[in-house]
Image (cartoon, rainbow, N blue to C red; front, side, top):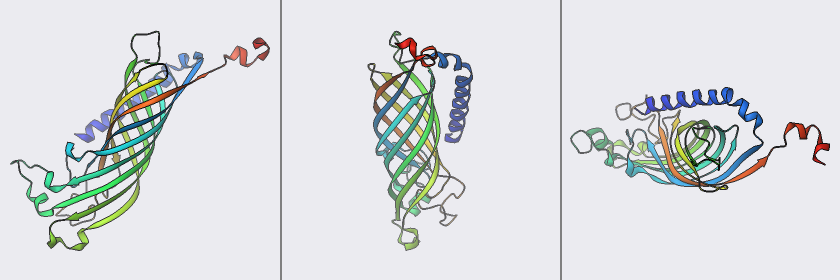
Length: 255
């Protein structure tokens, strides 16, 4: 389900972004104003992997993000961001078909705690021109897709002593990540913006929980780990007025 949603979000975002570059270029060329934003966000990170095969709300942990946005055209925005959040999962919180803990999770008894740091760049596609103060609509839904890197440090241990000390690990590692998702922006005023965003982070590693190379009877070595971010943000807009070409090429007209 997550894989299908991720592929759909990627396809839609790339299609819309492509149309924005080619179909909105004429309008972008006559724009006399560019905007950029600095913002902060608070929210929650969540992990999905061996210890949490599905999204579990009770695994949400605090996270903070800082970002910089720069518009390319009316619909397209480029974003650079930093994200820091905690990760948490417990085999005992997984619910099986009968309502209890599944046999595998009950035997394994894994508990994972840790944190993740992320630096990423993303392309956002805004469906509405929410900055135009002459219009009544001052909000827009948007999609985003990007690429970045992360550093995760986690500690995993088991309550089953028969698995041995080798099962208990604490490690950190770097990896590539592809963030994708959707959000909502609202221009509270000409300068202040509010935002709500949710997204997935696809990693190419099975070691967020330190279980990727454990006994194949206890783990799924063919399923990579993911993490999520959901949060609110506040940002401040900076306006840059561009000099029209006829004035830029002939500065005497400004005298």
